[in-house]
Length: 301
Image 1: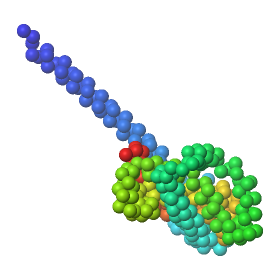
Image 2 (image 1 turned 45 degrees about the vertical axis):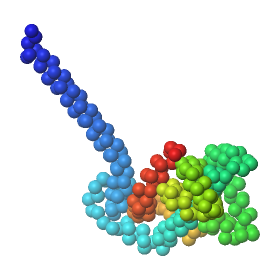
Image 3 (image 1 turned 90 degrees about the horizontal axis):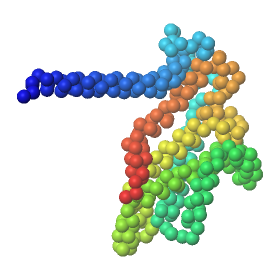
Image 4 (image 1 turned 135 degrees about the vertical axis):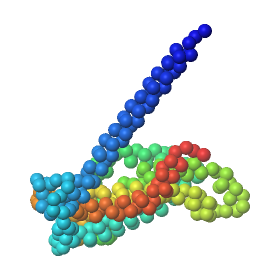
């Protein structure tokens, strides 16, 4: 007969090796998570530190300012040549209108592509996809000339106007948003449409009363993506907007670092910190809708 002590010894050794492996894996996971957390939070901490550093210089910047103050925020709001609050309002206005129009136009278009069958439907979808592949930077000269011509007949949509900038942003967002929303509409069962049509409902009633409540998550995703992209865009706004009063936040903030980078770094950091508040509030408010909108339409139901 075998000795029980000899049988138990390998079992304890196996359990000990497994516990060591688990500890090693746990340590590696925590280490990787810590490195990723530091990598993600370091720029934010550095911006916060620079915003409260009264020296306003990168040469004397430290992670923890020795003499923290609100000097940079006072300079930001009291500078008559740089209307910071006006820039924030311009960005919120342009991004908000762009987001609302993008949701309305995209939802109607995606519903038509998802539910209706018409000649040229597939070709139009492919055309929208191909147009979206080319970066907007390739069309900058054409956009500049088009807005200049449009401004001669419709001044509210020409150069140096928020209306013209909104038109350009809408054109940039239509392609990807139509495909994103169409995939979500395809996940809604067609039995809902057929049952409603049997009861005599029109296409508008089907869309507004039945489909629209089910696709609110993807509408929130399109809205926030459109708002964030328009709010953070710099290159196109810098080319199309010519007067300081019409600048968006990103273009206006560039003035703080374009001439004297070291002297205005603290003011720039303070403006960047305040400018991030609308985006953070929007994400926090719509976080549940964003997660649902990005995941629910991934699989066709």
